[in-house]
Length: 162
Image 1 (cartoon, rainbow, N blue to C red):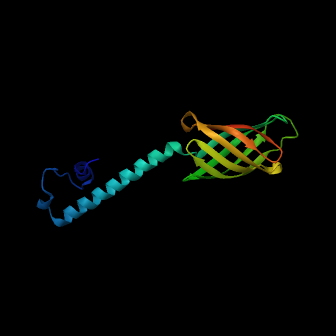
Image 2 (image 1 turned 135 degrees about the vertical axis):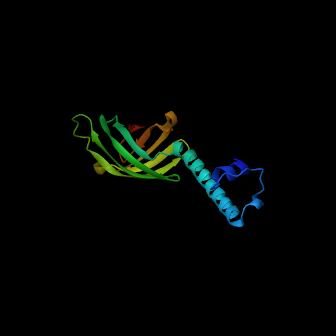
């Protein structure tokens, strides 16, 4: 963005860029400069936010967690918030089917997201805490990976909730 377009786009009144700003009162010149700088700052902030947004894992996710050894499968949701690379949130998942060895899962999440990699801990109720690692895919709309707990492990996957 050129200073000329900032001058024209953010001025309180339109000014011909070729016209000398000295022909205007000092007050209007200062106001025009201040508005131009504010506009430039807003443009940069919006640009940074737009750049960060596609990379964010913040939001509501639908999850499937599996434990092949016990044939447990859970389905649920996770809400994540992200500040920088830090991830925090909470989630819950219910067992699919009637396997008594599969308790409901509910807990808090804390971890990190860098690039296309995610890593977080999840307190899984009776099963204790588990560490999840995975990769973002499909333009940030899916995640999948592996989880490991005290004596359990398996795959997991998630997709952004509609």
